Image (tube, rainbow, N blue to C red; front, side, top):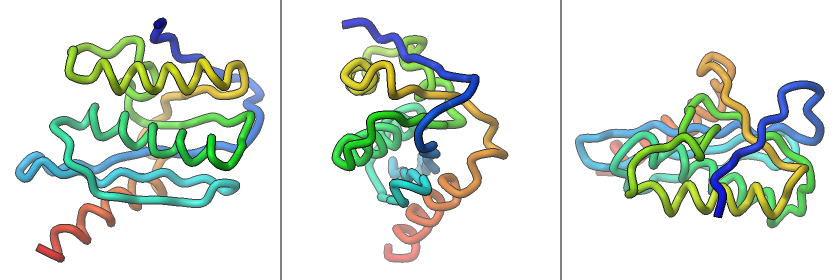
Length: 140
């Protein structure tokens, strides 16, 4: 399976879904989230060993929701290069997650794509992920 992620930079079509994570390496937990006008928002806490794993899991959460919603064209925006370009990722431990992302993109090609953006353009999804992780800390 090819791990190629498509990028649509000019005249993106369809809804935009922002994806982010906020990780705590002390306890191995991460808040993951997505936000989009057409899809809404979701945020969860998951066990993750790295920020790259958390970002990939956030992207997969958003992709699963977009597929269930029947979205045929969507741009997933993330501030993490490993999620925006899973074919560039290193480390065998993340290969299964990168392959899942590639599978989603392949199934929905050419309508779905990923794009890396500055964190300053990903404030809502980042805040949702941080809030999910903060909720876990308060509950402990």
